[in-house]
Image (cartoon, rainbow, N blue to C red; front, side, top):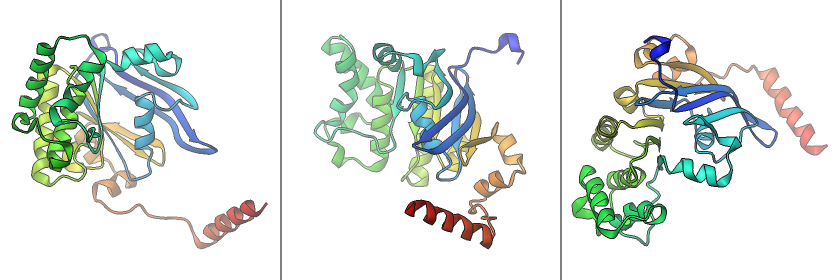
Length: 273
């Protein structure tokens, strides 16, 4: 694709650094997500996926660097501007995050009731469309505690897209699901992207899902971007950290005994000072 034909990114992260107290967890991370793409963010546990996700949602301010959504620098937006921007974004949480006191249908309707002035009949029609798409129509009167894990995921996804967002964030879509249910959810995500022209960013550790739905993959390690590429490019990587992730083997600890002892004693001395 020529540079002239390349659309503006929906998500643009530049030189993002992030700290929790004195501990730095992200180091100059870059990411660009273009319209209609499905991007997967992955890496070993503790690599910084969740922290990056929080920055993308505007829940955490960068130490340095920028996070732009639809061209807007999140750190520069006021509360009202950020609120308006979030109406263009859907978020599906790992465990569904449904309200336990509301029925399935009431949970899915909630964003329409809170953020629009639509009449009752329109709300019901829009909700029924999403329930039908997620194959949940016959369960609309059930409470969240009565739903299976796969149904909770689909319900959370239905609520996330009830307002037809341009951008969808999905945290660990396949976590806790059996392979068949996980594959079914992957198909739903692809169908949503194709039917609604939606851009999707997922945070996951599930390789099967990534290599089923992702157009490109961002791989993080110890808070650093080590690769951004297509499925074939990631599979072909010879970086030992990526090979370890793909082979599901723990990363090697190359710290020798003397260095480990020094680190432990230094921390102990610092604690007592």
